[in-house]
Image (spheres, rainbow, N blue to C red):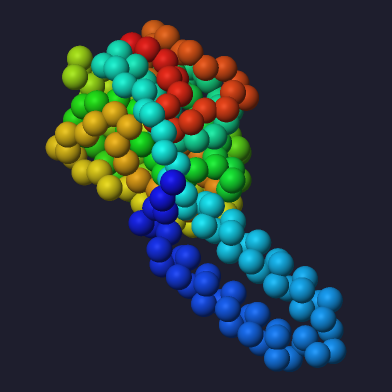
Length: 219
């Protein structure tokens, strides 16, 4: 396991804050309130461990195949339905949405091999990630991939109530590999996929998925 590069500034700042809090607690509270001192120490160290965990990248064997669509993130499948596309596409698509809790691995990965046709950031609200309108009203970054066979899929990184920063590394014209990093979302969020109608979906509502590992469907 390693720590994602997006976590370095946050972790560095967190270590400083935790150290300052505990030094002040040690000198100001410890002599008179030893129990409170221990509570603060345990709470702050626990928070620091959580922050380290949030930016973890575990070692995994990723799935691959030109006919496969793999999960772009860890989380729980919360939506599988046919919708009218609201961005880039003009037809109906299968929307598959994955909710990411703060405890999930938060690196986002390319679901297919291919070329990036479109990469666009949209400012917006910070509704809770499971809200139906979060897909269209929240801050988000959308990427459209064209597979080697010519099929196209749109992936939206969507901010939630706690997610205040979306990072995306892709630009139009990039050639990408399935399972490679597309970006990162900080502290709880959601990822939507818009797939061609007729795509075979191999997951179900409330199923837990792993980014780069779980096969969501097949062309």
